[in-house]
Length: 606
Image (tube, rainbow, N blue to C red):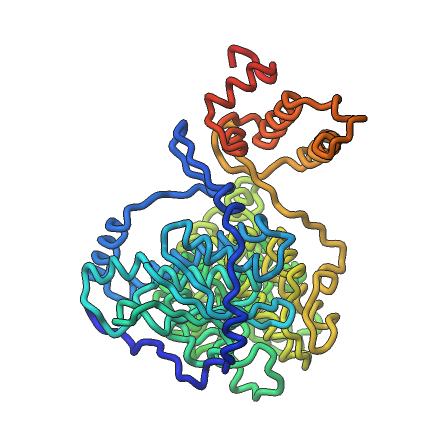
């Protein structure tokens, strides 16, 4: 097994000094796990395991260990660690979302320890809290945990001897993903003791990524490999609220930020095409960051030291677009007192980015086609052609194939541009990136506006994670800048500081449809639920009267009535899916069918 960097042993000076009394006080018992276990269901009728609305999978630990071994031997230690770390990260994000649903009205601490408890229920190992400090509003996070019986160490030691590096890669990713989603800020956990290194237990320490300083870069590389290959991420090595740093020391603000699978997929394509001379077409909704990815592609190319010229085709009047792109010769029209270079000539040797290319006029499309085919342009009012060496990157938020069919876009130009298409997914489909973007933009606007905001309130984090972001990353950037301006100095950004222009959002609810698929619930179902809740309240009140020996009302309720109501509610919540309704009530599907038929809720033939 090859050796990588030295293990991340943390010097004592980097750990907060904690008194024995404080340490004992921090070793509070976790709340009971009944609320979590009650959401775990095994469905033998359709071969599914459900944790709330998430499908789960039982995997043999030995199979996981064999996979780890094969990945290490075939792909190398770094690649294997990266895959396992990101797998854990995504699992942590999913469990953090579950934590908010299971314990919405408990303390922050009880809500946060859903993560360690889920580690136990999912068979990863036992997690004991040594110290937890979690204040979302003040932007404070410190976690220290001890792991025993970790499955990764057991399988790692089975195939490799005791080494010098920690091996709980998936668990570290889980802790970092859970905490980042929970805090709405980028949190990094590092393993400072590991059984694979000969220690009696595994010990992890987690803090906000900016508090780790330069130490974070090595570990973050396995969670955000594409970003780290381009350099240190924007927030590593400098405080989130730093003010007055020299501009030369500040990281570029136009670097893509993210770690979701779709983000990494786009970055993989960008890195593959960057060294070539191929024309690239970025596709995606407005605001997803097409220009940011284009600038990144330029920086990674052999043209990085040459100009990058960006043109928003939609922002230039139709009668001026040709002169802007190809230049003007003196006397070409009234007022053209001197010759002027176009964007193609300004970008000579470098990269020309054409945003909103679908808005070009027919005449401009023809000239652009010639420039791409022949590598030469002709200024407006000139009869001479000029050779240019320009790599074109185009972007659009419309379907160019539909535009071709409608006769608004040249088919030959489309095929010339569509050499290497890269589709960027909208932000609502890569919510794992939201905490990283929140951290990035908070740091950026604290610095720009001279503010010292500590972070986001829990209400703001929930709102950011549940909002649909129709304007994508551009909208998020504007919303966070608004929050930085409105929030009180030295405080945290709250939801009212962010959503002040009439943005509407509701918590997204999901259910299992009749085909067994996870789908968003129809908003009209919520209205039905309100009506049903009145019936539940009425029956609940009568049950309470019965338990309290209130004889005035106890003869008006029956066990059969209560069970019938529960059956109806379960079927309605599951949108008619009997198996899903049975899981909600903790009974088998045959038992559910029998009860439904006996009460006439479904017909005998169904």
